[in-house]
Image (cartoon, rainbow, N blue to C red; front, side, top):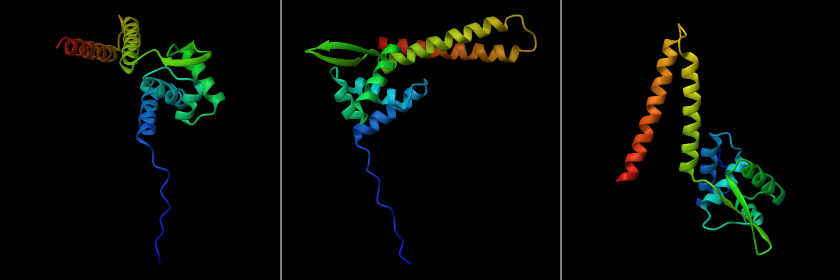
Length: 150
């Protein structure tokens, strides 16, 4: 009996792998694969890109590209500008800024939860967990601030 193997699928290019990885990171914040792929292309680009250029790099149809760009614009992650009778798009935030915004939102939620737990009996273990999470987030911010000073 001769063993056969299926032909390998088209291997990812390094650029496609980077786009996929950034899209995976953004998915942790609830951003769709399409929006994540387009945002990845924009943060990797050295200059603003047209919707056609973005579509070519992501392999999305023009109409899908425009829909994803509009969603990213509503989220405040992408800016559209007009140059030489053509719309161009650029990313507004870096990954670090996204992480900082996410951390600030999480800290806000944890502070609210801690306030709600104040004075409640039987939930001391949860309050300790919230305090530990806030301590951790504060420690991470201090470490990040310290690394910038060096």
